[in-house]
Image (cartoon, rainbow, N blue to C red; front, top):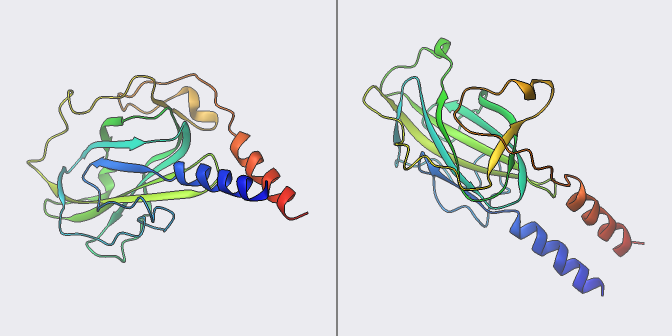
Length: 200
């Protein structure tokens, strides 16, 4: 019985560990290492996506019913990049499939110029409370364009919702809301109960 419960807990953890960044193109397949900060265990690459100077599209594919999500920016071109610029503050992604932000604005005070290198970091805190990481490397360009509406499309039943008091004033990202409430503590409490049961 104990082995079965351990197996179920591990299975829940593994199934919550899978999300990918489709655009800008992610650094690479990090499915087995997404618990490794800051970029899911994948080092910076030379495969950089051209991204508009004032902000661009972000498309990613979560595979869990909900996750508290952060999207950050780090300036630079190597693995010492610090992701200290918040592009989208914490929000609750709901549903799985693909989720696209048509345009995520860059703070104008950064004074970026064409050719500057940076990396985008997506963090998801899953239903088990574990943090998952992925990164995409970009080069800012005056000629880069946003994703077309046919490519920047949301799956049916997926959405996002800001956290906290600002929830009634969403940023203008073109992404709709879902009002479905998920049992946010269900999986965490299940894991805690299994842990307590096994070690008592």
